[in-house]
Length: 247
Image 1: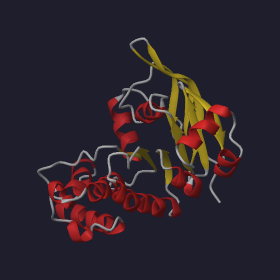
Image 2: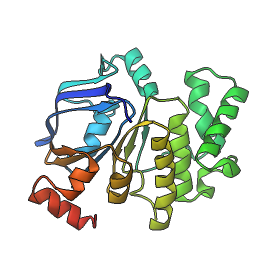
Image 3: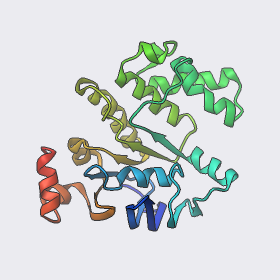
């Protein structure tokens, strides 16, 4: 059973790029312990909402609250919120001159002021969690895409976040590497991690999600548990999208 405490709340969030309004008064919430999967066509606003939650893309109007605290540009509050909200991107964004171990240990050393020994011990625990302990001393260029993404997940976990945001984490991977990353995400979900996942992996959404949100032209067009979402689509547009995805 998941808790029903909203940890992230968005109210009437708008975002425009030039003349293109990408988010149109989006209101929703994300509960502690819940896995929410966000799907929809490219350009529908899915990734922009994730980036707004983490203030990587400031929203124009409306409010986003994390643990009751508004997301703003206040440096101290923003740093605290980014420690609580880990993010994994399409591209792995690992530091190429650092080993997997050092990539994972860096933020706890810099921000939590852990000693090198403490940070390395924690990093090894996390690399073990994602099945990368045997590659701890390799550099990103020595790893496959799936391995790099698993290191990126460990790096995001290193700050002990309360919620994890995944922005199409498998879209840059070769098909045979997708499953290894989804397996790590399944384990996180089973462990009770609060997760918001933008993905086109419909099987993952069916199996792991507590909720599925469908974005359409900057709005949330449907919000339902996965069984209802896939078995009884809210409208023809959603039905057509699911059909195209082969779900």
